[in-house]
Length: 77
Image 1 (cartoon, rainbow, N blue to C red):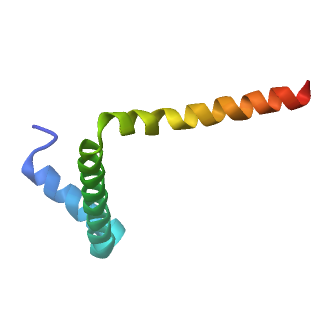
Image 2: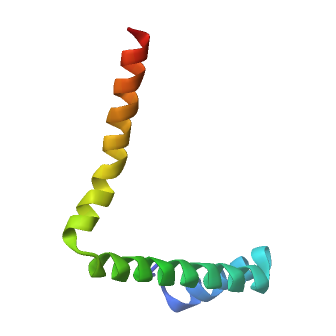
């Protein structure tokens, strides 16, 4: 017998519903859907930015880290 057969999936669904309740399952599904929607929106916004702005945004934290490290080393000397 296959572990993912229809009777096994139905029993598994009933156990999950009994443990968590239908409202938590519905909330989890809604949260997952909103997370996917916001991820798609962020990917769409990234595609709209020119590549130079994306590269600048990616290297900006590194430049800040270099500046703070240089300042820290300079003040300790």
